[in-house]
Amino acid sequence: MGFSKEKMKQIKWLMVLAAALILGIIYSDQVFAGLGFAFQIARPFLYGGVIAFVLNLPMKAFENKVLKRWNGKAASKLKRPVSMVLSIISVFLVITIVIGTVVPQVTATAAEVGRKIPAFVDRVTLELENLAVNYPELAEKVEELEAIEINWDSLADTVFDFLKNGAGDMLTSTVSVASGIIGGIVNSVIAFIFALYILSQKEKLGNQCVRIISAYLPEKAGSYLLKVCSMLHKNFSSFITGQCLEAVILGTLFVIFMTLFRMPYALMIGVLIAFTALIPIVGAFIGCIVGAFLILIDNPLLAMWFVIMFLIIQQIEGNLIYPKVVGNSVGLPSIWVLMAVSLGGSLFGVSGMLFFIPLLSTIYALIRESVNRRNAEKGKYFPLTEPGDAGHTGGASDGNGPDRRDKRPADGQKKSRADNGQGRK
Image (cartoon, rainbow, N blue to C red; front, side, top):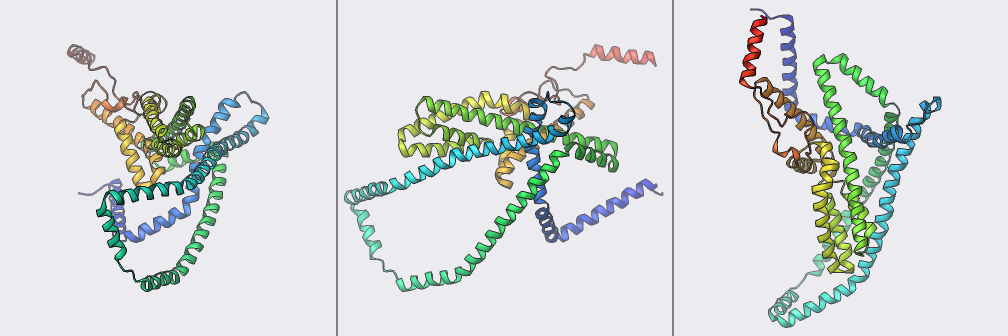
């Protein structure tokens, strides 16, 4: 029994794939080293793509809303560069406001802490003396520690050897840090220039990608890949926009309530919480810890009231604001948001937290669509959506899920349709 030409071609490609997998397993160390080297080369271009994606959000707003009425020959040439410059200025302005508001206040607070440390040490020393008077056994333990003889010559020799051997390591570390800083600056410049090229020619680049996919992939696979890319773009754009808007709302609420209750550092803590709230779930709590510490230096009781106020505002934000602003745009239940944050944070840190939520949202939507389609093909109907769809970031269904009403036709309707089909035959 012979095989057709198409079948032989499939077998050949399967054998090539199997051989490649076996070689990849055998030489896994070299493969990972090569992937790491390729990533180092492509890193500035990847960063440039991320910068272009972020800058594209305000640039589209400037093009389609702010400069919407600007038409004509000059607009066709200048609207894109003007929108690009305005988006860059707006992003740098936000970063400057955050740094200019937070850093000076943190520096002043650190200086104030330094001034208060001697008084704090005196209070601790007084408390230790009182403990020694009230608990004589503690004084005995201290005397036993003081009786321990220390070989100062041996300790000095150890410190001298450490300094002698560590001088070369310190010099090497200094050179490596300096080269790393220079390399980071060069990569940042390359990434920024690459991002500008992407933004200026994004329609042309998108058309080229579509043409390449259409040329080298079957029609069905190409259409599915374009659909996945469109969903990824939509989910990432909606997540970033919603997260930034939610952070601004949260920071504004803290500034207003802290000003009303006459708490110190209202503007600085509000900006800090708004900036850290960009990190899903855990970000606002980081800002709360820093803000509570700053207030604790001035007034410990007021710091306790700040924590209580934070918990109340966090409940309002989590149950009312977040589902409306971010939840409906992402379409991911709360349990999967938590898993995305945990998995992304453990793998790639803060950037992984931001990246994995829209990525997992896209995977969730694709799997849900596939499951619903297969169940519909098998004649199985489920009248309700998943219980988590209306969760913290789930919101309403995006249209891929089953309808809440049971659309299963009655038995009489099925029978009448079957009879009509037989009659037509």
